Image 1 (cartoon, one colour):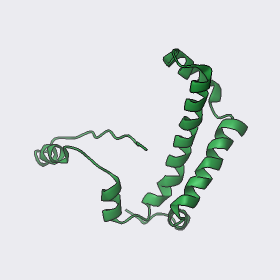
Image 2 (cartoon, helix red, strand yellow):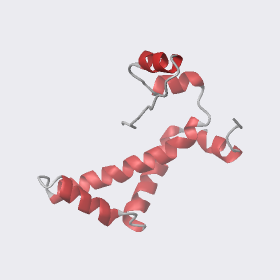
Image 3 (cartoon, rainbow, N blue to C red):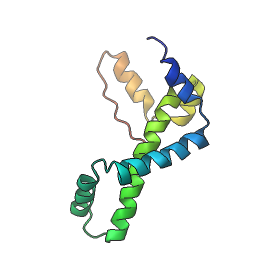
Length: 116
């Protein structure tokens, strides 16, 4: 596998506090300026969580865009992480079950979520 592009490695070296500041700006741009799928997300929240107040749904919508932006700015970081740093940040319960299936020649589908 070829190494990541130079610009991706450069972005990955930006300190995390600065990356998260950029994520806050990106979240605001996506939600308030570009209005990227805001109406769809708002409608989905209203349909899925009718018990929440409008203010609670607005907070949830803001947090949704913050989460998307944080994932986007964190992605370049993976390009420069050592194997040890990556292992420290990613947990995989029951990894031995996956290894056992792979050792027996079976395909394994792993689903993951970004939490935090």
